[in-house]
Length: 260
Image (cartoon, rainbow, N blue to C red):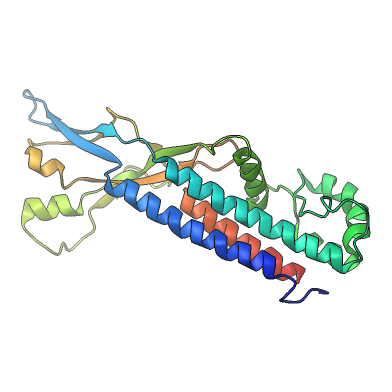
């Protein structure tokens, strides 16, 4: 396109900054898991001999998680806007308001179509053809649309997050402790279902019933696979904060390449 690598340096710097925040986010999530995110306890039934394993307590999500998430989202969103500002200047700075040439993300294809001619005047035909390929509007679940929504939320309030777990338990260490075998001939991570849907962490939830008594020491070897989700409408419940950011940064980089 009409831009040069130097002209897009502002967008690239924002992408690099976003990646730093994503790394900080991953560290914050890892620290939350290591706290640990939840504690496990057990209760034995004297009449049956069974042991019910349940979540005893859940730690609150540190505020630093949302801050890293919001900083990453803001830098990704600004990277797109800076690219469009560069292209607006390359097209002769059409119009008098420099706040107009942003990377607009529309509700649907129809709304985009109604604004297409206006975008052509601001940025030129070549840029609009690139936008046609990008499709800057909501589909069933469009990561750019979600990025824009979350960025707008973060301007006014904290993006809500939710502690959740995978629908199963990691029992590898448990069976190693029970059998004394260091290398098991099988994987003991056995999900309750294979849907992949995350389950909110709730104190008191029964995770598994063992048919025999267990010592309190055994509980320490039962692991819950925890995640932090974005708890906002229209964001899929199975998307963790790290997964969303990885998808979003990939989409932003792709958009910048299309616009170059």
